[in-house]
Length: 174
Length: 447
View 1 (cartoon, rainbow over the protein chains, first blue to last red):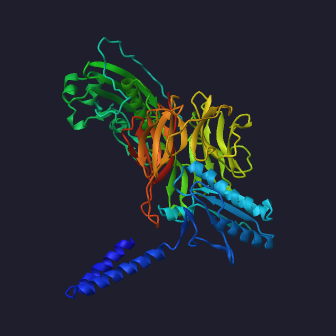
View 2 (view 1 turned 120 degrees about the horizontal axis):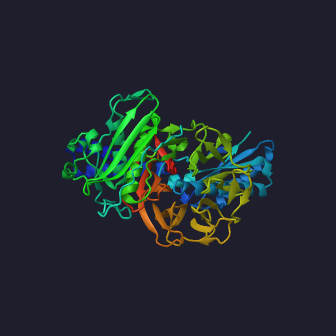
View 3 (view 1 turned 60 degrees about the vertical axis):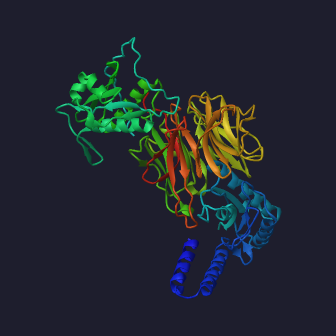
């Protein structure tokens, strides 16, 4: 999609420069390449560490500074350092909002068999629940549901999309 | 679904003959399908048209022959010959075929028949002929309600298949699957049921809640599946004749990956609690629940051997998804997959000698089969994404679903049902009105 647009830009530039000298032409082409590089970076502002998503593109906030989700490596339910940091902030906020209950949704990417992914999503959501409980949140306030690979946030079939879909999301339940 | 009543009026058992009659070898990829002529069934005078779902079927004899031909063609074992080349009238051919005429168009087998439709009865008679040996191989007659005419066609195709291959057919069967519509991030999923050839689609749920993994009972009128009704993912039981549904058991958490035991009396499934999935059974009569596996890993996708003595299942107790086999009481657990990659969705074949599976290796998905001890792995098809094989009742064909890649807007995504022969040949798309996934093949509806 992006490539296609750039090609069009270059083609139009070629039309414009027909008759001008080569130096100018090269300059414009280089400019085009530079622009396209910018566009690429912007489009993929999300980052990954290993195959764990570390960006914020899909993240929503339960309160200021309290992210609603954490991300996982392929086939794993281990919490990363960044995930634990997010969850400690969730726990601190939950302690203040003692009347609120929460649902923790566990999700998997599309690159696994459906039934295994249901189990994996459940395991991920429980990893989050357990961690919140160790930070003083009563288990009665936390329910867990796995969607397996059924509810991706990113429809793409690429490593970045999959990393955004391997997630556990904390949602207010009341 | 109305129960079909088949009355077999006459059964002329083929006469034993010294001449070797025509036969089809189904144990190998068949690159040379048997040329067969399916004569339109002769409609007797005074026969009525069939009215069905607002449509009028004028020449049901011809329609039946078309359904038979499509079954034959899709099986990959037969090559139905073009009707334009037929020289003999259907009524005369059914009484006494001029074999030399049929041999001339290279037909090695010939199906003939006649039909009679009255208000509430459809009577069909058919014969299978060996044109080379100039012999009758089968002669059968059925009577049923007129709306069942497609089933009659499937039954005829099954009888011919059985006579020529020596194995039971699979045409008079149905497929239950999940119909999918909507964007990838918010798919609407409904249970759908259709005849094996894609006809007579019926939707069994409305799409209000997510439904997954329907599986037929060996007794056919029951289906077990996973529903997210009221956001509580639980295994359900559905009677497709009455529409009555119920939750299976009373589990304080997600139950999933259900299948019936071969006698239809139990449901085996996973129950997830505190991040750990184990395998349980519930007896549908006594309601007794038994825990079969007890391990801190994920144990799921259980499937019984046809004699009910063993269970194949999926576990990541070794670290990653592999296939294991155990006795049906949960003892003697043995890992059977040691190849490169991950293995999931084991499904025991109806013959008991093979386990079909999904394999994931280097970003590709494979449907394959192996012996029940894990030896003799054979990969039948490779693709971007495919899984969930289900066996035809005769164990010769596997149906599964395949998904395509999509861009970040979800464009290019589709989920479709496919079938492939155990030989690895004859891969075919099964056309459905909507996208489809999680197919499950029924047993033969009539035996």
